[in-house]
Length: 326
Image (cartoon, rainbow, N blue to C red):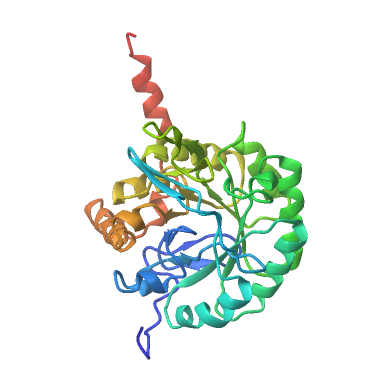
């Protein structure tokens, strides 16, 4: 961290607005739970370059998480059942946030709880802390016994908690959606109507793995959340469907490990992307993706990112499909 940092222009060629008043210098964010509290990754890339750091999920009180083993590598992905281990909101403000304040990047606090009241108290606490630029409301984690996915699986419950947290904070509010539902657009419409400024999706898909030699689950929690490149086509489809259904910004998440992966989400209409599992396998990934987006714009003679967002041409795909002889 440098003592004096030159602040970047708010509206550079890669800048995007994600929700009410939340301007990012570029569309590349880190996904909660994959980037610690930011400081852990400072040796691997310049945090000043990031559009935003989304910190590890924060609860009202410290949380130990699930017992090990809680991570298992799968083909083209990873299962995790960490259980939202974190230092708690107050310790984050006192011990972790001062480090992030020294960088020219937006800081988004991901929050969760076991009750609506828990969520609201965490939101109120973090909203008073200088240096936090937005709240990401996690109603979608499949690895906790209470809260999490229970709030995100039904439109009515998702809308209720969104409305309550919206009233508890003046910060831009991003709601993170679960893919483990029949119709993600129904959830998206409900939380948009309840006051969400933006949506982020998808969180992990529930999965499991078995140790056949010992005939037991690979994870102590039995099931966990599947992330990584294996889920990207599903995530891209859900992001595209959600963009058609709501009028608020959407942030794409799911298996983004390269520039081309990020560009797929942006072309489909996502206003930003979050890099997650790639942070484990290749810590500089987010910075390299930013470099790649800049190179893509130059290659295609685009002065700004904005015209690229939502530029997907579905009519040409339909025309090509008309000639299929299958």
